[in-house]
Amino acid sequence: MHVLVTTDTVGGVWTYTRELVTGLIAQGDRVTLISFGGKPTHEQCVWMDTLSALTFIDTDYPLEWMDDSEDGIAESTIFLRRVIAQTKPDLLHFSQYCYGSLSTTTPKVVVAHSDVVSWWKTVHESPPPDSSWFRWYRKVVKCGLEQADVVVAPSKWMLTTLLGEYGPVRDARVIHNGRTAALFNPFGEKEDMVVSAGRIWDKGKNVSLLTSHEQMVPICIAGATARNADDPHKPDELQNNGRITSLGTLCERELSTLLSKSSIYAATSKYEPFGLAPLEAALSGCALVMNDIPVFRELWQNHAVFFRRDDAADLARSIALLSGSPVLRDVYAKRAYDHAMKHFTTARMIEDYSSLFRELLVGAAA
Image (cartoon, rainbow, N blue to C red; front, side, top):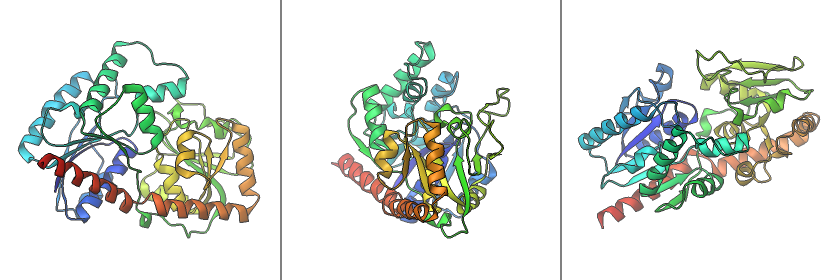
């Protein structure tokens, strides 16, 4: 089977794509991969070196959620049509909504990694402004979803939210994201330390919960502090009592090392379609302390310690509880690890996607 996959070079979608592509190729499939959103770094591409069944095309075309992206999306759509005509894949797997509306007889899967409208509503607790850009974005997303053969979301919450915002689709599935456990070390010597990872400038990540209340345990926060290198606006979330350390953006190896030493991971997000970072922490043997939002409850059930939604004081209390009881902390670390190994591995994700792909190909051939 030859699958054409689109991805972006920003955030967790690239990580998800690496797991998907390597898994598909490992089982004998061929992949044409196209990236959008800016050129990837050399470090981002190292994993491709040994994959002879992979053809990679990187582009500078913008992503649909970026400012002033309308013209770029139109141009990238023309480019994508040309690549599809040249490569003739058996199946199309898109990580952007806009390409779901491509006119083609090749089966199309659109994956809902995130969404600007639901992000805005969650973060601002109000509808987004009635601007020309938001009207354009809504139209693009709605058309892409409606014309996809299957829409996939990484959680029931994300799928329900998406359908509630944009209306019904032809077919919809939930396929959980997965990570390769071998990339993480759950057996490292643990320190009495909390880690949290995510874009600090993104209010959906809610990092200020960690810094707006006194903490009794050292906190390390990994993530970009500004949206881009030219952004003059530095967030004030990192002002605290000296127990907070901002590490900036870490590479995967650095973050994996940090997680292997940490005993607790704080998942503070108020908006999260899935959450790869908590999964990576669980695979690293960390106990999870999580904001009590629906998606975290859905995915982690009783395998994490939940604090009252967006309550900084209760977050600090929950951290102190686990820090003060190594036995309880180890219990929750094992719960999270076992749950992750059962439900959120790359092998399980590839199995689910392969089953869906075969189903679509049989239907296309009928």
